[in-house]
Image 1 (cartoon, helix red, strand yellow):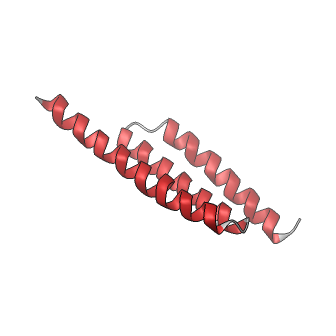
Image 2 (spheres, rainbow, N blue to C red):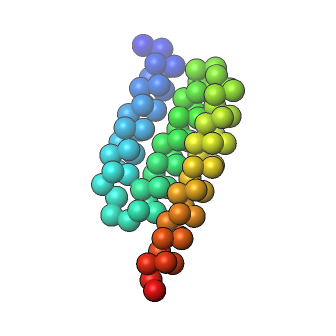
Image 3 (cartoon, helix red, strand yellow):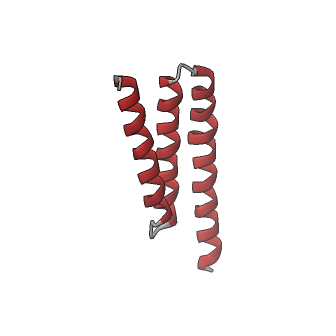
Length: 83
């Protein structure tokens, strides 16, 4: 096994573990942050695979836009539910 294979295996295992942690998270905001972390690890995986265009797209849309949309939605639903 090469160093690339070992790093890819470690990265894949980390992503799967973090997804299971996100699924079992008690708070919704924690789950969103864990899923954002998985998206950032996917960016690292795409860079390792020499796909910088896909990595940039994943970083901007997957990690940035989707995470902020989830967080703002959670904040909006909490404010309306408090009434």
